[in-house]
Amino acid sequence: MTTEAGMQAWLTSRVETWRQLTPQLDALERSRDHSAAEALQAIELYRSLGRDLSIARRILPGSRVTKALERSYAKLHSIIYRKPHDWRARTLTLFREEIPEVVSELRPAIIWVTLLFALSAGAGWWLVSSYPELISLLASEQMINGVERGRLWTEGLLNVAPSSMLSLGILSNNIAVTLTAFCVGVFFGLGTFYIIATNGLMLGAIFAFTHQHGMAGELLKFVTAHGVVELSVICIAGAAGTMLGEALIRPTHPTRRESFQHAATKVSRLLLLCALLLIGCGFIEGYLSPDPDFPMTSRVIVGFGYGIVMVGALTGHLFGRRFVKPAAGS
Amino acid sequence: MAAPQVTLQSITGVDVELRIAGVGSRSYAFVIDWHIRVILAFSWWSVGTMLTLGRLTLTGSGQSPGQNYFFWVWLPTIVIYLLYHPILEILMRGSTPGKRMAGVRIVTRTGDIPGVGALLIRNVFRIVDSLPFAYLVGLASAIVTAQHVRIGDIAAGTLLILDSKEHDSSFARLTPANRSLDPRAADLIHELLERWMALDERTRGDLARSLLGRIDRSLSPEQLAEIPTRELRVRLQALLNPTA
Image 1: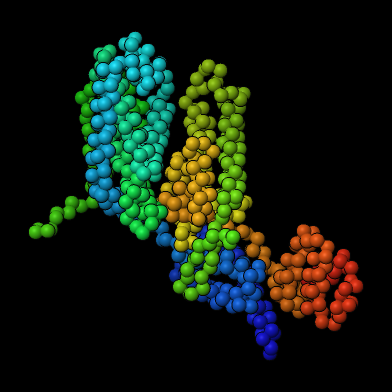
Image 2 (image 1 turned 30 degrees about the vertical axis):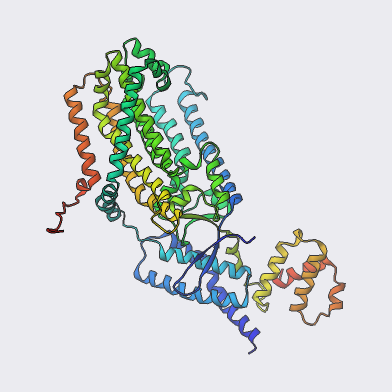
């Protein structure tokens, strides 16, 4: 048999197997619970496809058949190498181990960002106390007019929209602010600093403005139940954002791209918990905070109680993480 | 300039080069997806509004349309528009209808199917990529980076590769009705017939004569030269399917 005839015979013998590839690969891709026999069959197919591709590259270089074999081979490779998915175990590891580790690593950044927020709030308070006309730069005209007439914008919120709608609007807005505070960290951390400083400045300024009109107590009453966690989460997301900036300024990997990717992958896990905490804040802000009949003591209990839940979640203890005593002498 | 590639390394020693999609393919996929999500969101909103309020209106003519309208009409409309990409990319394992139509797919830097986490990260960073408007940051990033990636892809460690479905039919072409025909020749004839109208008359004539000469050794170059181009096409079709 000549080489040419041998090649033709080989090609003819393999064609039927290749024709079955597309439905076979589609079936393998769709299902996630393969039996051991199916898995072994897939690995055997992978090996034989590798052999076929190797031969096809030699005898049919650049042909469409070779390209089709490459495509099928790549697809089977990704099917075989995809990560096993055990949602329960994965979620538990995420909340019990991974997020607390990120929080622990971020602790200094959280402190600095919180300090920036507090200083900005102080600056906002001082600015509006010293130059009351500056409030027009930070608050809407409607809000200013309302306070000047002795009415907080938070009053009668429930008459404007039902609690459910209010909660949804608030929580989606808070999640958007949090994600933005994180993402803009890509601008070497400056974007995050800007968002945190602006939010702090506005909070301080508005408190100063309401204080001038004798309504700071009312505003504090409104904020207490949800504010503890809401403001903390924004600071935590900001700290995560600064980590992105730091990864670019002081790369921990050979390239800035790798360093940024590593930081983003690690820190973004924390955002999931932040989003969940903000959903809770949204419901508190939509249902409890605008209710004038909800007493201050209860607001404090809800606010700090939810704060304790937040700390439990951030440290993983809420999800069953055990306290680990440091080894003696270490 | 050759298109950038990513190598999928295999333990069998047979590596595969995956071609990275350029800015054009990315934009094309995005434009298709954008139209799909706008049409879906608008359809939901318009049908819901018509059924609830009896006419298309954004304000409800000063009257509050109520909680049910918000939850059944507005909320799903916003969800369709904002969560189209993350939800479909997760469900379709790194693809969307637009990406499929444009022949591109998301993979990790090692060529594997990206996980849920990576897909969520690349979507969260749309906040930055879409700045200041019309995805200018993302577009600039895709233009200047060697692998044509936007910031979301850099953060998630993903790439967009070319993933054309046209190769799927290649295996079918290898088994022509004429069993005596060399599968490689059958593949070439199929390719030539598919591109027949796109080629100029002289080129397609030369290619067809060359193919016919290799398959039917009894034909001399002079005989082949005398066959008109239209006849050549008929003869090639007959070689693939002699009974037709």
